[in-house]
Length: 106
Image (cartoon, rainbow, N blue to C red; front, side):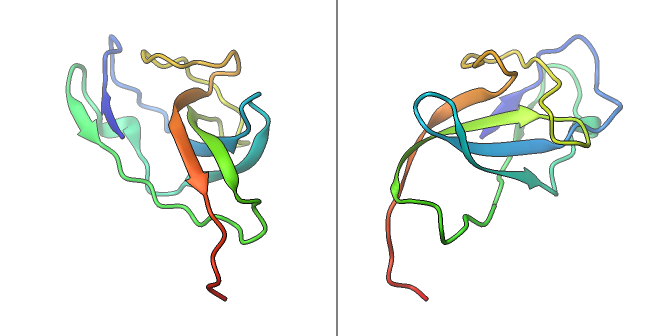
């Protein structure tokens, strides 16, 4: 993901990035916090590449999922409205789709 900070000021409080896999109706099937994400150093009108790596649980069913993100409070509740398309009414933003496939890896 590459994000352009189009807000009017910097964010001095940290709002953790949460990554979601949801079904097409928006029901959460998996979510994880990106522990390394920190937007507090971002400045207006700059672009920042973001790479997030999260472990997907082995019991997540194979299938197609929507990939969504949110900036959350410490309890994991989405709190920040972003200046990007795809907001789902819960302050989560759909970035695209992913397909999870079954593997034989133990």
